[in-house]
Length: 413
Image (tube, rainbow, N blue to C red; front, side, top):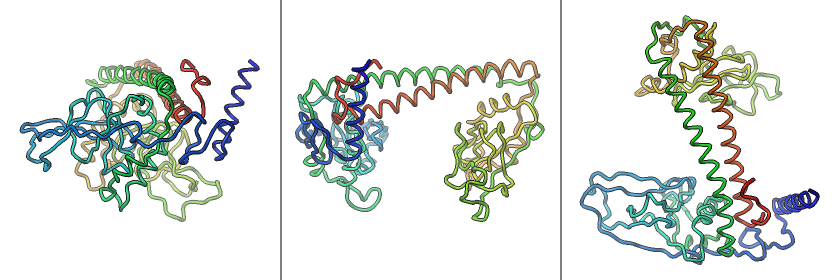
């Protein structure tokens, strides 16, 4: 135990030094990175080469590949009529290629080609690179997601906003500096991070399964109710308002303001705390619903608060649990109220006139207990999922630059 504690303290001290910009013993500073002495910082051209697998534009419909911003991977789009594509020459990609969108590289549009992307087509705006044998694809799949890579891509994309900021491909190939260590070490790091990905994927699947089960149960309970009644008979609807500068103070004396879309944490406008002069308020236990796109998202208020534009408070006279679950069930139906609307908002009349099912008190209690149990499972899994994502993010920052070495990390913990 004593030895374990000394190792943790050693790692902590090293992290603290690097966070302050200082170089610990056994480390060096190269191109803005602080890395172990046995690591290097190299340009992309040292680990990959550009490939151009040129093909003629198909005469029939085809799928093309594109890259999401914020390093969130690839996606497919269907080209029904090739005549609408100006380029006569396209390029084929292969699994494990490195691909970048030169138009949105400044927004971190870089990715690794997945198995399901194999042989899809791209234009000249998506230069493609094939990794050398000294580079682990899984290792560099994580490297390209680092914030430092986004910053470099942004600096290499001069010009104005949006499409005017085009990546300088020469700079990208010669000067996008990334960490490099021996192949064996790369694979070890990739394995540890892959463990995190597997746990995240498992938690995500469990969450999806439980959410699906809840949707099926909701359909059984709410699909064909015997009796319906207007929501206004069961609850008071309080629409949010736009506070002005006279309605707030900066002395932490007022009430928080729920502003924008409702969510499980009751999103607040910060740092202002709003005074009780605002009459549009909710209480703990009220149902909070977003009235602007995405319309119909609901949560239970955990605070006494003022409510701003974009949300409303539904204060049930009774029946709160079932009403809350029913509003979750019909959330997709609210879209028809906002489509085509200038302000894309649900108005108070829409909400007050909403027909909701009447269910007996005993049955209400049984149904609520089941839904509440499912919701607790969903909340717990969502929390665990977020914790694992944060762990993966932290480990990535530490392992991919050698701040923590593989012999100091444990894949199973």
